[in-house]
Length: 421
Image (cartoon, rainbow, N blue to C red; front, side):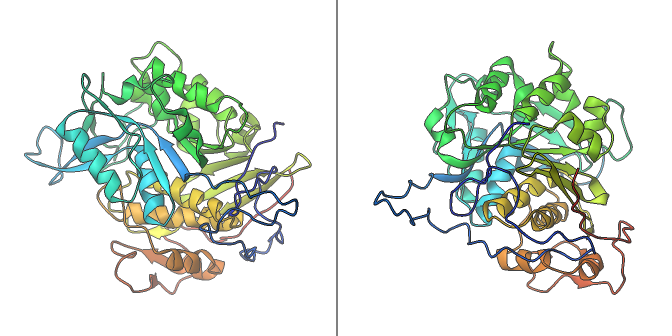
């Protein structure tokens, strides 16, 4: 087993990758909060040897990856039949940066865009969310990527499925695909508490794969590296390399890994959280997203065993599923930066995902921190009675209590499980 870093709210490291000590809940009750300080607290200053405290990193989270201008149909139908589109932005890493910035964290997005109008729009739109875009490079010779999509979910497998999004990418030869270790500012990438990456970047080009291999390699002073597998079979079809094996190797080098059960089945023929943990024992924290069934998190203990924490998803009136995975990662990372217990980290991921699911684009309006904290601490019965619909984060009213004891996903036993492997 490798030892990996975890971040606490005061900037120190928790080498076991787990949440602060708490009682292990086995009766379905959410564990009590640890009383961790807010993430805006300064670096620790309790040194007794007369030395100054370590400088606070310039960012809470740095996200590296391609963002594109996205065009969404103004009415349902095939791309061939839709006469007009609305412009937005889309990119897994910039989605995470924007969501975190809008919840009060200091974030930086690092990428490359063309020296064109779409590049202007991307930088301005991401910056408008409060993200530092000063390290986004402009390429005078390559364009900004664009894509067109319908409202369904992106494919993860090799077969066409009902409800799947129709997506047309125009990103080959884009400015972002030319990212390389030599072109990026190493100081800007390391001056952070968390560096967030995804497998999408690895699929863009050989030089982008070199970037991810460089950033995930063990090195002194490396920040906590968060990695969302984000397997997109279409992005790997034109590559001579084997995408699934590359993604597995990259994930094994990271500290915090997000992976969906569906993409794990498609990429690695692995089924179920325990099979995934067996294949990925190295990350200090492994988050397995299980769709309507919620999420399961494995976290290393100092003795080499894992805590295993599960929490059910919410009932949500879905407008569009695109962007929910990125939003979940942002919610989980936000709670991790605040040193909340693992159970609450999962619930914050679900809440942020619900904000994305209830809007047509990639970026939903996150709930206020106060609202998210209150909902994340609900008892299982109250959590199971929630149903979240469009506008739930902005209308000022509490989410509807449906009066029943189960979620819309049919979960009858919403409990937290913490066991020793």
